[in-house]
Structure formats: C-alpha cells, structure tokens
Image 1 (cartoon, rainbow, N blue to C red):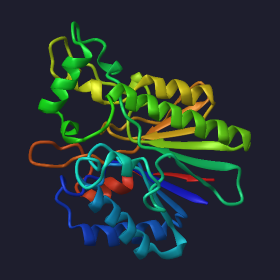
Image 2: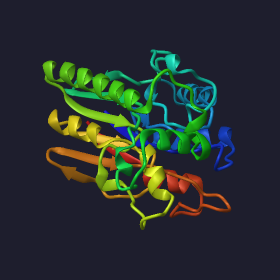
Image 3: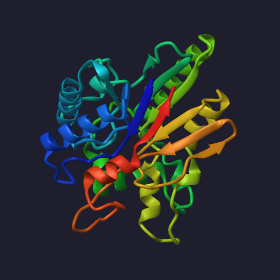
Image 4: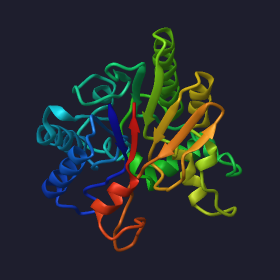
Length: 273
C-alpha cells in the first residue's frame, strides 16, 4: 500500500478555496495511487471544519484511498472538547488508535501529542505557573480547555503511546507513528537569551515522547507543528520526518513554492509499505 503524509495545511490561515483545493488534492492523490493518506494535524482552527474536510475528501476519493487524521493544537481551538478528542469520534480520526496496513506487518499508530514545557528549560527563572500564564496571554492554545495540567496531559500521551507500542510489539508489528507535536529537541530553534521565542518553545512538544519511541525501536515517526523543512533524520533505529506545509500570508511566508498546491505536493512524503 502506498502511504502519503502531510501536516499543517492551515486552510483558513492560508485563505484557500477549500472545495477547489480538496478536489485538486484528491486528483493528485489518485494519480499517485495513494492507498492511505495521513494528516498530522492543523487543518483549520476549528475541529468541526477539519473533520468535515476529511469526510469530504474521503467522499471525493472513494474507496481507492483511505483518509486518516489526528488533531493539532489549531484544530482543538474550537468545535471539540477534551473528552471528544480522547474518544473514537469518527472512523477517520486516529488519535490513540491504529490501522494495520493490509497484507503487511506494518501498523500505523496515531496520537495527537502535547507538551510539558521541557523544551524551554533554557529560559531562566520561569516556573510552571509562569508558562501557564504566558500561554493564556499570548499562545493560541490558551483558549483550549482541558481538565488537567499540560504536564499531566503529556503524561497521558506517554501512557497511551506506551500501551499502543506494547500491543504492536506483542503483535510483531513494524510501526509508523504519527503525531502533531515535536518529539525531539534536535528540531527546536533556540534564540538568543531574552528572545520571546524561547518561551514559545515550551509549547512545542516533549523529548520524553522521542525517548519512548526509540525505546520501542519505532521505525518511522512523522510530526508537524513546527513549520520546518528538515531532511529525514535517523536517531538510534528511528527515522523522523516533518512534512509541514505552513503559512503563506502577508506577514509570514514559509513556502518554497508559489502556490499552496505546489508546496503541498513538494512536502508530501510517500512510503510504499
């Protein structure tokens, strides 16, 4: 089965014609004989719109291509509760779920992920309370409601991931794991001391996730959230990929191509499993 993976399409921020873009994406995926299309979060700033897009894309593609997604922080801002995010609310939603690739020993495991402020440990003198206050004041996630702290939520991610990987190991499966947030410090961008960007690193992810993934010798890990363009990188026996599309607005221009479709195509990664 041919698998294609993307993340951080940000349809609303990029002010795209969703219906037209969806049809063009479906046409390209069909041309590439993609059997499974994975989206690692951040489609819209509203989960209901993200889910509707996935369902409409699935209808456009038909049975030739399955579409599965997880939620990024932007998807969580509106239209969904924490409890819903932790539930099996749609067949296309793969958070804390898995999909076994037919006629292979490959298992795809999805988890939205989260963060624990550990990537901002270079910011001197800041407490957990300081990071919580800064998040509410300046970060989009400040409007996301949850019944626990960020550290506890990251702990839940680690527990879910560990259980999923134990189950995969018992079934003798090779694993492709996809998540939204950053699982390794190597990808974090640090600014000179005093730069506010160092505070925002608190909300990027957690190195603890990468440690778990490498402990279980996960084969492939895909993440988003940071709009970067790294080459695939192997640590221990695990290869990491980031396939974010990112923003192209008047203020922020992250694309390396002139159009969204060209950027999206160039950022796709394909696996023949």
